[in-house]
Image (cartoon, rainbow, N blue to C red):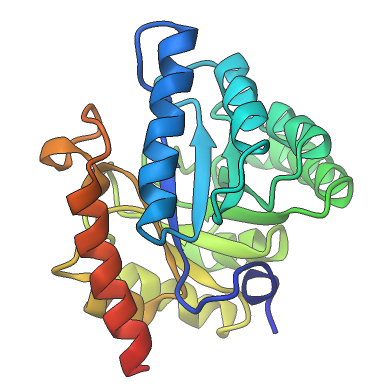
Length: 246
């Protein structure tokens, strides 16, 4: 049994992104709670608190609020550009999982060793599940290693790999998912990291073990929009249908 399946009680868990939009700290907090309630109410399994539009301090304020509520969804954290802060928050708050956009491949060889040591130390300091990216959207590839080797190394550094194509909202390349699955020998869960919709959910989730969803839940399916309940409901209805068929 993987740590992913130990953390989430449902198969093919769906993790919804809280991007922390809003004009000022108070507005970000209000919008994040509103969007969290919508997603949890429609059956989203996990909520990723991420400073996509906010700052690390906004992440902490939202975690403090959400961890005091009983929404029924697991709470996770991703502090962009500051992995150490994410782990510090996971030590302070009862988060179930941490997402790190890149755990291998993004650094030159001389920097990769110290990064790996630091990541291992931080990972050992928290009980939370760690989800990491390799060849993730917007991340450089500086390792000088073949993709397969980066994937194997990345898999050894986390509990699940999040796979994307090149951009937010762009459907994840199924050939890439297959390559990652082959490189890991099926030993590590793979999550779709971008571009999941109700229309492609059957194909995408047949090849993966779950997904992270951001833009699709929002107005006009754009990252700049607000989460809308009908969008969440339609995708989760498709996911429940897939789970029932399985």
